[in-house]
Image (tube, rainbow, N blue to C red; front, side, top):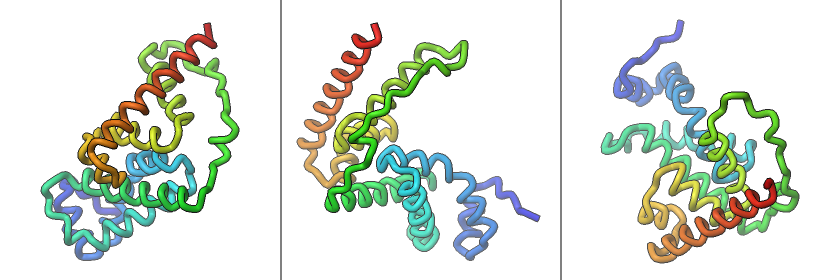
Length: 188
C-alpha cells in the first residue's frame, strides 16, 4: 500500500531516510515538468530521459544540501537545467548534428481541434518555430521565456557574460520574430 504525503517537507524528510516509496512519489510528482524542461533544451527524448534519471539521482544523493531557500521544485529544476546544459555542451564539443536541424519537418496543423483559441495556436507556432533556431538561440529563449530565468541566471547557466547574454537573447528574439514573420507571409 502506497503512502501519500500531502506535505512536501514531510515527503523530503522521508526521502532523506532513503524511503523508496517517498522517492517514487517525488519522482511521480515532478517527472513530467522536469522531463519537458530537459526536452526543450536538448531536443531529444532519449537524452532528456537520461538527463532526468541523472538529475533525480543527483537530487536524492544531495538532498541534505537542500536548504529550503527556494521551493524543492525550483531546486530540482535547477539541477535538471544544469544537467541539460552540460549535455548540450558535450554534444556541441562532439559536433553532433541532430537530424532535425538538417531536415526541417513541416507539420500539418489541420488536425487542430475545433474551438482552440488563436492564442494557443500562436503559442504552438512560436514553440515550433523556436525549434528551427540555432541551438544557442533556442536554449537562451527557452530559459528566458519558458523557464522564467532572468539574464543574470541565464548568463550563469550558459557560462557567458551578462552582456553577452543580453545580446544573445536580443538576437534570438529578432531571429524568432523574423522566422515567424516569414512563415506568416508563406501561409497567406
